[in-house]
Image (cartoon, rainbow, N blue to C red; front, side, top):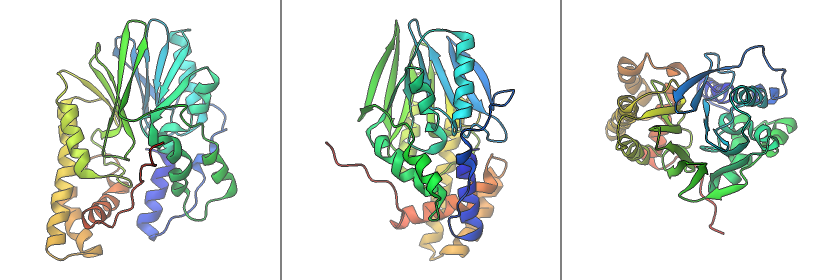
Length: 323
């Protein structure tokens, strides 16, 4: 669980306001004796780095080793974890780190970019990430953000190569497809390795885990999940949070979004708002999804976010004007 974003949601749920917090400020902490993630081989020189149970890395990451270089997908919530990922890669190969793909702008996926830039990698992302990484991320510290926290966000290493709908990357004979899909933030990419049938989904897929919907457009998101399920099976899907899964797991996550939208819409149609709406929807959601990870953190917030989305009152990041 991303510590910073977790604290944002806990504070906003319990207090109704945004509070400052300092987890992200600890990026210079000494490296632990063991990495804050589990490295999982997926075959074909592809590895998923799965965040530990305490959320010390903030999110999942991963990497692909090709014949002449390495591609990294996302760089965790802090530089200490990113340095440990780099060390794990170096145990497996001395090939250059050529590319980093940020699947979206959220802090828990981009805070280690500078570590890999210093190692020689080029950071790529969908066009909106370049601006949002330094602006939209400020909200996770609340309105009383401290100067040092603001400086940390503004100092994040932004992507140097931008694309609109996708890009192809080549590592020797290995082709890697990066494709943009809507839903989670408005600037989300998935990384597809066709020869291995592995897809790194970023936060467009949360396996058995309630998602962060702060920037989400859930109707578009459900269509994206249909597209991901249409890939030629069998496919291993690496989520932004949770363990790697299959098409059934992606379908289950799509079912959560559909159930949530349907339940909230019914209460809106019945004239319910605020606490009354939440009090009616929450038990129904808990009955089916109460065992999923982060239920206690995100369930109420998810209901309110979808309520605002359906009412048209939700604030979501807007794409920058085309150059």
